[in-house]
Length: 174
Image (cartoon, rainbow, N blue to C red; front, side, top):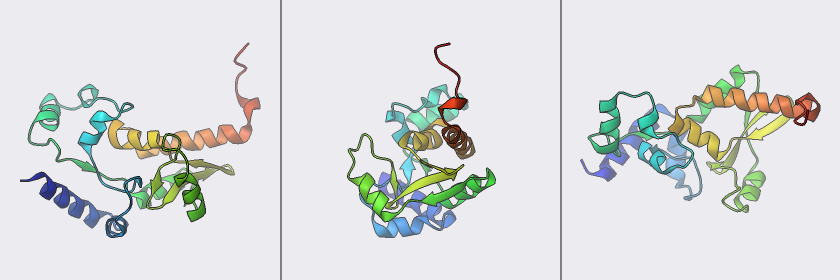
């Protein structure tokens, strides 16, 4: 089966499971927008991603992903509605930033720009602190096998530490 057809089938199958994805597909978002389906193969070039051969997969599966029948045929997408539900389970709040905040982020240099997802910034609010979802968070969820729940718990913990201030941190000198 030709690669574009595989990609189209993956897109259709994922869109059938994730209601909000269809809006992003129809919107034809710009290349810098992160609200898109990605191939597992894209993780092979991510410098932060754990190499797939170091993960706890069966050797035959790894071989098939890297060189065989599954090569360029595994696609991933983050369901943001389910992600928001996981955030609420931790007692925090998931929110989308304003359009103004997204425009401000868009004007930043790409190396420091937070990921823009469907024209918005994904945020977690906990302890009156707002934390943006970052590109490394996306890489961890999509390619490193870190669960969204673990990412959320780490971000909520970081918000708590920020709220408490530097007085709660150990003295690095002594």
